[in-house]
Length: 93
Image (cartoon, rainbow, N blue to C red; front, side, top):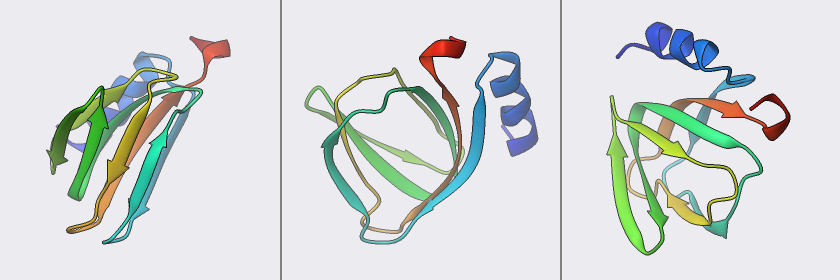
């Protein structure tokens, strides 16, 4: 899926914030939560998310989904990552 189609899908699904994020090689964040639902398309590099003890790596072209308030770890230590992400805040869900 290309970024234009992904962004159109996010808008159709009522994601109220869409942004391109870059995390450098070596990036890592311990367990945390977001107050919003997230859906992201990887456009460069890769990212590993650990949710409920399960580690999953997402690379270019992959889409990950993360419900609001889901405890998770994330890292892009090997290559860094760039992704287009939509965020759906509870008030707009």
